Image (cartoon, rainbow, N blue to C red; front, side, top):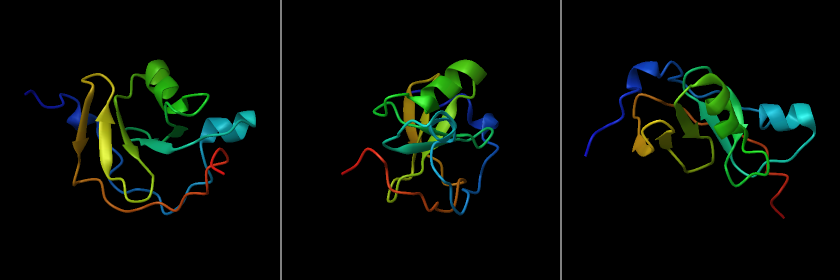
Amino acid sequence: MAGCAHLDQVLVTELPESVPGCEDCLAEGTEWLHLRICLRCGHVGCCDNSPARHATRHFESTGHPLIRSLERGEEWSWCFVDELGMMLPEVTGSTRIPPSPLMP
């Protein structure tokens, strides 16, 4: 099985201490379910189970291929181009996130 061909684009190697939520949802006044961070520029977007799917939309508009989950206990990353999930031990830290507005 081939690996991800985009690891050279990982520029975010330390996760932020905290984030207020999905950047685009906050700007639009919409709600998110789970948060993802772009490993190229640090943009925080919402997952594909969120109504607006901002993490995927960020990839589609910028071509930045790699994201990482910001959810507690999740350390996986995803490459949109190669459609491959992986662990990236060079990305460290954990992020305090607010509760999802879509969770009861």
